[in-house]
Amino acid sequence: MPDAAPAHRLGPHVVGTRVVVRRIVRGGGASGDEPETGPTGGPAFTDLLGTCTAWGAETCTIAPERGEPVEIALRDIVSGKPVPPRASVRQRVSAREAEGHSFSAFPDVERRDLGDWVARTDPMPVGRPFKRANSCLAVGDPGVPVAEALTRVEAFYAERDRPPLLQVEADGPVEADALAAGWRLLPHGEVEFRLGSLAAVRRRRRGLAPAVDRTHVEVTGDRALAVVATSAGRIAEGRAILDGDWLGLHALKVRLEHRRQGLAGEVMDALLEWGAERGASTVWLHVETDNEPALALYDGLGLLPHHLTRYLVPPGVAAWPGDGFTGGGPGSGT
Image (cartoon, rainbow, N blue to C red; front, side, top):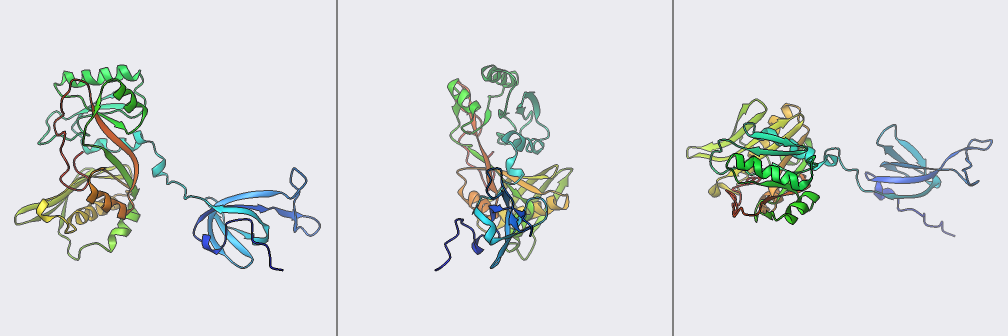
């Protein structure tokens, strides 16, 4: 008579996969190989969570997140199943903490803290103003009722003769309160915060790297500018900031007539190398959700969405400088 099918979803196919296994605890009886007795009088069980590294005819091996690998007899497995990969440490940070790494991208802006909120304005913007440098990051607890915080934000920008702009986490409580107070969403500027392992992104880029490196990198403190130029001038560029071991990429731009030639990747490669040399382990960026070429590029590199933000203006403000602008290249426009 054939053996009964195991009552679990494990087998050779789970090698390399994170799994949870419930198994019998042995060590009882005179031989020391009998099942120990559990609190109900039956066999004692224990659970193990880790990655299956081997599956043989009689045993499997599970490597927990901490400690040495454990070899388990297949006959002792009571139940088990694959489980989703554990979210990386970088994915578990809050939206407020993640956004905080962007502050050094604009070192010359004036800032005023309101609890977790930060009102920002660029006193001397050049060209089209960046939303991130001229908005209040309203993520987290302002330390006062949201209605009062919104009033203070409007006052901050009124004092500087600037139109108020609010950056909020999409579908969060601050967005709901601001909309209820009459603030409206900008039609453009819904932005994903994406991040990933810098080492993993560089591995994925290796097979795509150009045979000739045409990128020049200029470094100022913890900021870098990468440029690809020809006799006609700059055709692609991008910037990076280093905040601890987080490398942020921003203002990636490629001239229209030179797109789809891999130039954005060349610029990224140079900035990733610069960050890696300085000990960065996480790479992040902002990308507008209607920038399909950039989204496809970052999907392929393993830069995963962390959170989504939107921009709002208060009642009575008809427009904001740059409202309606669609970015000029991967990751630009915010």
